[in-house]
Amino acid sequence: MRYIEPHAHMVSRVTDDYTRMRLAGCEAVCEPAFWAGFDRNSAEGFYDYFCQLTEHEPKRAAKFGLPHFSWLCINSKEAENTALAAEVVALLPRFIDKPNVLGIGEIGLNKNTRNELKVLEMQIDFAARHNQLILVHTPHLEDKLKGTRLILDALKQHPQIQPGRVIIDHVEEHTIRLVLDAGMWAGMTLYPESKCTPARAIDMVETCGVDRVWLNSACDWGVSDPLAVPKTALEMQRRTHSAEMIDRFIYQNPLKFLSQSPHFRLPGISKL
Amino acid sequence: MTRQQVLDLYFMDARSKLIDIAAFMDRLERSSGEEDFRMKAFREALSQLGPAGADNARQVLLKFSDPTLEPIAVAPGKGACGAWPG
Image (cartoon, rainbow over all chains, first blue to last red; front, side):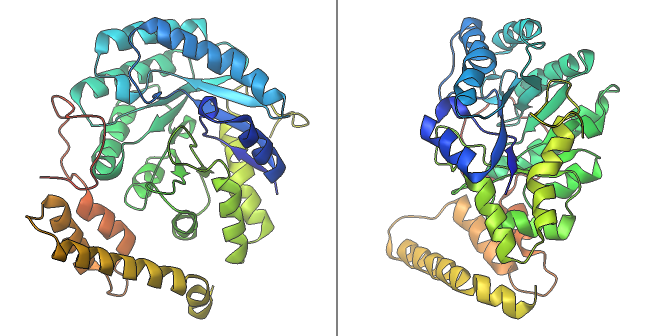
């Protein structure tokens, strides 16, 4: 089995996780910028975090033979302070051309506030002006449906955004079709206590198809499982899905989307 | 997969989860005080289950979701509680 982990917060994980992921067949890991579990007090805090994502963590991953890529942004949980958000966005040009940076993410909404929306639009505009891929976080639980609708509206209103260069993450049964019908990619996140289970993720593939979808663990500092993707592959085997179908879902699809960034290159793969 | 294969793979897991829900509702029944909007949404979602072609998972998620489209002025906090208070 081979797979790409397209969404994992490895700065919050221990080195054993890198070893286990590598043993399970992981061939690349991608890390969006997100909330640390507490609010940072200044743009300098984000500067340090961006250095960690673009310099330190790729070196740590490389010790385990794993190519590491990053997405940069200010996340929605820290977007209520629009002045701070503007300072953080102003930092992005200093990092966006670093060799492991794939685009802007995970931007999005958390509680669907006016300020969150302003900061989302600010970062969509940045991504459009710099021709960057976009990775979007959708809100949790009762806020997901509304947040997904607002996010799709914001993306559709920007004339330069190409739907095929946007992935909307954390979809569930009530949001996946909205995303796919908009021409964007949909990410399914496997969480033990929220978002979706392996069985439900496979249900969505069986009902919505395997085009423009990927699977991720979004493992972080909370209850999460860095091996959720390969475990779901085993579940697909139990359901008698073919090896080709599984490979498409957990390897070829993320490879196809991520290869739209000139920075995403894996050893031995010159182009898709 | 055939229905027999689905049952063979998932019946015991679903049975266990159903009993967990039943025990949760018994526990709630034994406790004191009032229920809130979360349990109202929960009961409504339960009542949706079952009919053929019901699109159950999606319908349950919709029962817990905020159906509005207007951004709110200020976040009440960072977390979500699982059901829209209305």
